[in-house]
Length: 399
Ligand code: NIG
Image (cartoon, rainbow, N blue to C red; front, side, top):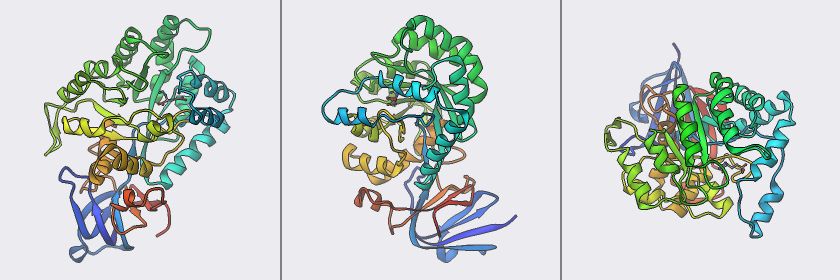
């Protein structure tokens, strides 16, 4: 049972419910977990001491929404969008064709490369989705490959109805054979409830089938316009509804209602539906930002995630998402970090394991090449990622 002490931390932001910031901090790691955290001056002895060089520490990011299983390039679509073209769900089909054509070896390498980039940026817990396979064989293949690389996989067979297929027949396939084949590799199922993707009835069908299969639920909701996605997510007790750009008052009330039996001070009680905001996607699609400020003020737990995908958000930088949430969505730096750490963990149901710097949590710790966490927003666009520890081991960056 060896112990490691990370000492001479300028400040440690814990992401706990009090937004505790410990100045001149140290963290003791034992058996992959945080065993102690406090002032450097009070730190216990340890077998190994790591000198943080007066850098700030915070929990590793928990990225609860990404689509990393893909091949191909859609930069031309991005350029066209910047020239004024609207984002349309149909672009998914372009990636589906390229991804189907990729071998297991190539696809695995692509996912591993993206996961490594995320890790280097401080992401120590990563979810990713299927959704560029859209056939039984391909969705099962993508789920299997993803499950060998990331921490959690979400089944998103209901991402788009493939061209030439009848929407209802495809939804039946998603809810039947496809779900059965994919289920061993995934923890959650998701559905893109949007004009041009899946309607309310089809969304209900997918959520019911996934629930019956014992999977947790998510909804891609209210990304491109108003619609029933958010209310359906709450009705079905989904762990998260993601995007949430076009919410009306009733949507926000429904989300807030799902958190009434939750005590934010003790972080205990019944978990509601997390609203996952994806600011990098909002920028890249020139959509109105998700109303993160209003959601927080209404008592909704929110997450920030990268939505790393080739169509709407080709970045895995959680730091960029935090910066944008502060500068554009009017979150405080503390609120944004909590949303990108603890909030993501809540959305993934792993809040007892990761997402905060607290005794007993997995030692997922990132050091910033900066003396304070405020630098994340104060120095936009700068790469401040320093050493990253996952389960107490240095996995990226240099001490
Ligand atoms: O989260 N909304 C649906 N899915 C992705 C976009 C996928 C794509 O365009 O390739 C998203 O933005």
